[in-house]
Length: 184
Ligand SMILES: *[C@@H]1O[C@H](CO)[C@@H](O)[C@H](O)[C@H]1NC(C)=O
Ligand SMILES: *[C@@H]1O[C@H](CO)[C@@H](O)[C@H](O)[C@H]1NC(C)=O
Ligand SMILES: *[C@@H]1O[C@H](CO)[C@@H](O)[C@H](O)[C@H]1NC(C)=O
Image 1 (cartoon, helix red, strand yellow):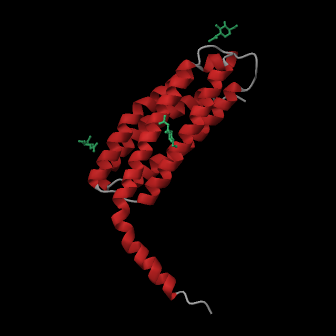
Image 2 (cartoon, rainbow, N blue to C red):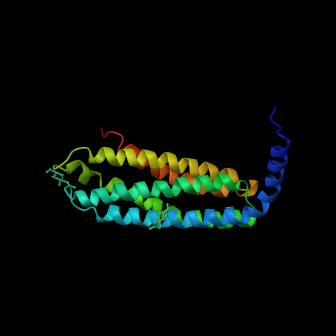
Image 3 (cartoon, helix red, strand yellow):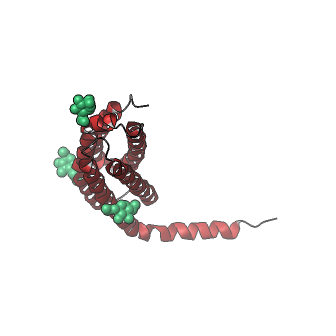
């Protein structure tokens, strides 16, 4: 017969020492948001650099940028979930960081819609638009998971603030996803 009692005691003591680590985890979330911000900027630069239909290197850079951003967002979601509910002060810091990233995300999504004719006019290879479509769908669902985690972690009085920021991001995503929806 296995004795589980020591495990229960261990689990209880881990719970007790888990709380002082909150600050460190909030710091991890802040680091993640810095990475997300940097990756949004890189992705936006890559999108802007795609200026001719058959520039495959530039098109590939957009895909790489999207994949890197996805990784940064997924890590952010993990750390927000691991942190759990945050204080007013931490939530305010996090909300302001997300607020700072929001225009870059919306700009990247607007730009990718503007570039659609270039993807569609590519003649040396087919299916570039469908890669964009797939990246947009993945980024959209990763971002939704991140947004849900952020709103869940926010104190009750700041949930509306967090929701306002994510609503604007979601509508830009909806427009971009819809622009590429017909790609096969
Ligand atoms: C993108 O995110 C990764 C972590 O996922 C980070 O290592 C990298 O520095 C970020 N890139 C930029 C340009 O910020
Ligand atoms: C939350 O929203 C309220 C109402 O718009 C605003 O007064 C307050 O400054 C916001 N707080 C943060 C942390 O953004
Ligand atoms: C796409 O190709 C059509 C037909 O060749 C051309 O008229 C149009 O200007 C091209 N658009 C772009 C954005 O390259």
